[in-house]
Image (tube, rainbow over all chains, first blue to last red; front, side):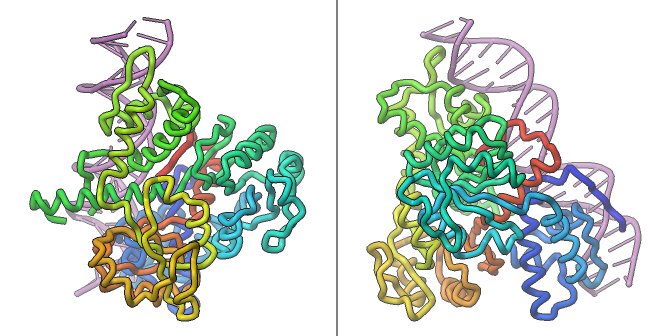
Length: 222
Length: 222
DNA sequence: ATTTGTGAAATCATTCACAGCG
DNA sequence: CGCTGTGAATGATTTCACAAAT
């Protein structure tokens, strides 16, 4: 029953981990002591086997007939997710999208902290963005180095402001960026970029649905 | 469990398509006539081979020594992405996240239209959300059916409001949901749900950095 | 009787190697 | 040459089948 997988955890698994953690925490608040992979899978629209594989990857152990112990699994998951030095992030952008990110606390709930907010638009510098002073982009590289920040969220959707901000980031030592701008910005090639936008997600869902229709027509069930 | 799509196009490919389309359109505005897979790959942090494979999947054809014809490829891509009946979507939620989505026009730029905005919080009903009347959730199922809507974006992050909204959606015929709430909501099992939040994306990036992993060329990810 | 745990198999996606064309 | 096109190889992830555990 002792499985270990130190490193080499599938990326899709890593992305699901925060969801498990939150669900475990929710249930902990209700006083639940055990959660089965079946229950977790139902709630997260995943197969039970996938859930068990994922949890076994980070060393979480369950018990036959009971499921996974809530408190212990929370510890395993949160230490895996939060136990590194990637928890502090910079937010680039201070517009509606950036505000939404700060406002709804998604990052915070995942154990990430927005340490500072930057913008390339001179008009916004010095203004307040949910309790953060908006800093000019030219301070970005130096602060990244001095505060040892590795991750940034990029949330400027105006193409011109975005390009300016990108230029300012170019010289920095930032290691990873989550780009929500929906633009095709040419980040330096040594930066790990994770691009996303809602349009592309909807395109994906639409495509999956298209499949459903075909499957129905050809009588392939499931 | 996971179905294939109409033309057997890999889901990750489908998610990259909108990014190609946007880039082609940008370059079209500049008067560019041809784009090489090399150029596209650089801009999107993808390998050139991946770009060619993706484009060939939707039937876009390039020309040796030149690349892909800008106008024609735009037509191929946009007809593939927009040429179905999934372009109209409902937006569930009217808070900061929902406003951000409407404001920065990400959906619109990808060929999706937000047709109506709903909320489960009685206080918000009838208020204005970027030009849309906020409708009560109890109208959701009927309007889904009558307007033949298949996709919804779920953007309520308050757990109680979210749960109420979900209940109201339960009876509807909605086929796919892009859930931005970051909550673990139990959508009906016949609904295709695309769950994601920024926290989970950062966790993924952090993991790539930490494990010193491949990261061959990271890019638009699933 | 259920529910976890896991190697093996299947599925899915990316990258390679090289053919073909302008 | 430079660049596209694609079957084959590789790699990654999910699912299966069943053993082990309580």
